[in-house]
Length: 181
Length: 181
View 1 (tube, rainbow over the protein chains, first blue to last red):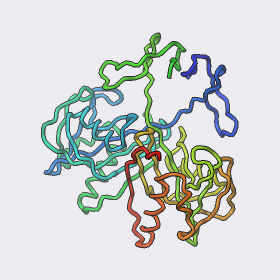
View 2 (tube, each protein chain N blue to C red; view 1 turned 90 degrees about the horizontal axis):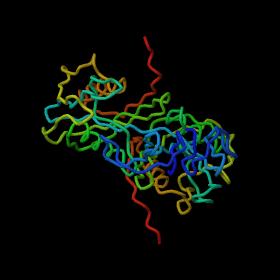
View 3 (tube, chains in turn cyan, blue; view 1 turned 135 degrees about the horizontal axis):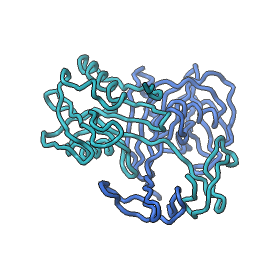
View 4 (tube, each protein chain N blue to C red; view 1 turned 60 degrees about the horizontal axis):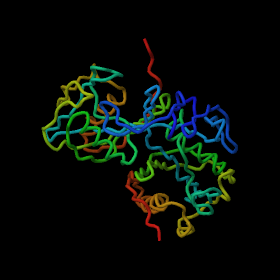
């Protein structure tokens, strides 16, 4: 951030009175521009035979890899409405959102990911503009080696384990930056 | 938002290609400025005798009313780190954060509130700059008529009910705008 969104004057980083950290503050109108984490919402769409709907990404990052439908929560919606909207956008699929199942903190990129269990309502799905293909996978068919993100991998592992016991516990975790090889 | 945070030129509201909704887009450098919901993080600090620590607000909104320690999550922290930080800032109190207990969607103000159960670690607490006073309350002492926010009221009601059974279920809800009398 270099300029004030309210008046267009340059901003500087300084700690406002009664605050604990540096913010972008306007040199002209003194507006304080806070920056906060963003929420990713998504779901685990389960068909009645137990298969899970995954999307192969048509966009970066992780173009070509498989993921659960998920994306940035928008203003004016709830977390579960956002998860359903992302599923519609990425897979043209309708779901009934169930319980919150996983919460991941990715502090190094200022994200919180919220993933819900969901029931896929029909088989009329197809790739949205951000997907190359969408497909149902049984547990033994999951493309573990070509999943796009670590929280997706953990969430699917936990989901299949919990499904065997019938006891779905809320899962949470903190992710560190990935080690680049 | 009126001006581009990157170059200072005016922005306009329009729907970018491949997008579904209007965004603030710069008329000069074409930067897209997304606006997304913010996360409120807080906790239910419980002392070993079962009393709960509440803070009386020294700031608007709801100046003078009682609330659980909570506030805007910051970049670079996890949800539970944010909840502990807010407790330290508002009540100078140290807590051990336990499970996520409540998720509230306040879509009309673009907020998601995440409240954790927590153990208060010692009795060395005092009002932070945003609190008039901080005090421990047993269940029968909770100032129900002067609580600041509806999610705080629901969360405390649920907490005391669940504590009787020992089974703390994740609670969630969607709040509509309050009716002004």
